[in-house]
Amino acid sequence: MNESASTKRFAPFACEKRPAVGSRAMVVANHPLASAAGAEMLLAGGNAVDAAVAALFALTVVEPMMVGILGGGVAHIRLSGGRHLILDGLSTAPCAAHGAMYETVSDELPDRRETAGRANQVGPLSIAVPGALAGWCRALRDFGTFSIADVTAPAIRFAERGFTATPYLADCVADLASDLGRDPGLSALFLPGGAPLRAGDRVVQPEYAQTLRTIARRGADALYAGELGGALVEAMSRTGGLVAREDLGTYRVVERDPIRGSYRGFEILGPPPPASSGVHVIQMLNLLEGFDVGAMGFGSPDAVHLLAEVMKIAFADRAVATADPAFVEAPVERLTDKGYADQRRRLVDRARTRRWEPGVSGAAPKSGPARRAGRDAPGGAAVSGSFGREPGCTTHVTVADAEGNVVATTQTINGLFGACVQIPGTGMIANNYMFNFDPHPGRALSVEPGKRVFTSMAPMMVCRDGRLLCALGLPGGLRIFPSAMQALVNLLDHGMALQEAVEAPRIWTEGGAVEMEEAFPEAVEKALVDRGHEVERLPRIGGGMNAIAFGGNGSLTGAACWRADGAPVAIAGGLARAGVRFSGI
Image 1 (cartoon, one colour):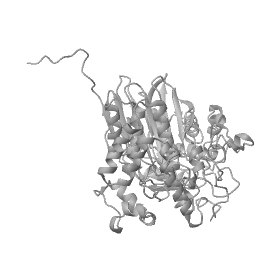
Image 2 (cartoon, helix red, strand yellow):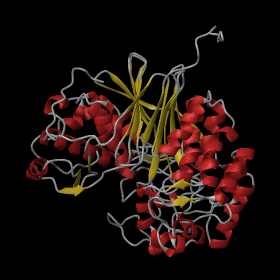
Image 3 (cartoon, helix red, strand yellow):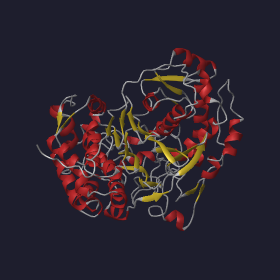
Image 4 (cartoon, helix red, strand yellow):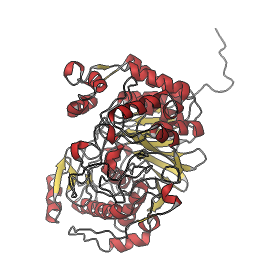
């Protein structure tokens, strides 16, 4: 993407997957069947929104540990005319929720978000008001061309006929077997005979297929005003959950403008609060812009140290300043200002790490009507403070069509298998989004009725002179937006090909230990330790990134990384030349 950038690598690595190249359209999802569902829509004449929504419905079947119609998410859409918009379908706290609803166990990291009995993590009190289905149907209504029946058809097939469990799904089931075993529906589906399903087993979901057929007939109303919502509310009432009919009936999707910044002549676009990504990816890139990152070489001690320092700066500011615009006045302009980056950059020591404090004042709470508007105001999320572990169980879809429409969307039920609760008779798996709030009362991130959860989701796009160059995203909780930033640096500074950029080894830190994937050489780890970093080695940081790059010749390149089951499907060719007739023999 940046032909003049250095491609020198200190830490060599080998890509495990291969990209796909097409000339008309591309869909990349984190499961091959979901990519196939999206491609089916494109080949039938649908646009990128149709394909993205079809892929998401398919993922609720084949990647059920990550995403569901009772979850939430963010979609970054670029329309064929060049307009960018963000659809916020994130979950909200129920009206009956309140700041003192949980018994906390610690005031310190990393356990600050833990509660007695894991009540905010597993079970009915962890379930927030779902926004995913509303968001998908809103996207389809406003920007798609197909009906809800069209885009749910592949998912219904997969649910009715079954699909083959991948090792990824089987491993997730094994990891959560004890929690899944507490729910009769989930136990029957994922623990047949009392043992976790194995890779290669057939997974059939007849109840969920019927739920999808109900959605195909009624759309979002089936949940927010119909029988599916009734089943959810009944289950909540019976088990002590808080989601009520009022919560479903008043839920609203919010359309937002993206955050925009620049980096070495490229325009960077991402979601605004309640997402952290747009603000803090641009903040980190502003900090890096003052260094010759490309000349350092990918994976060199200098480059990795610098990445760690800008992450620590971003997380220090995020802890006090990235906030719900309906509840808190957040200094977004200050955080994304290049002058502010200049001030912070002057404090970076190239030879030694340091402890970073926030460089901006804490976000000020709003009062009056704006605050009370929580659910319906243009905004609605908690302050994105880094006060504990944010679940990393999410999925991502990137789609482009022949007309120039592009979708990058990240969706989740939050934790692995969400709340580990299946709504009886429906096959729907509930989210555990209440875990994202601070369980302590009286804080910016505390539970409040109608408040949207914060998110690290980073469906990002890169343009130059108005032309789209790349769209990407990934799962991974707090590790999402720093991983997205590293992929952008790989493309724009190190001149990597798209497949290299999404698969390259990653680091992550929010101010403490620097997590480092195993592919980095021992020499890099030693150099970081010599500069004062504590280093922790991990096999994987963040989740499976997928992306599309747009070539100047009209080509599309799709890539998915080794960290998930992702697969790109490219479409080329086209219809017969106008006027062609078969002349016979």
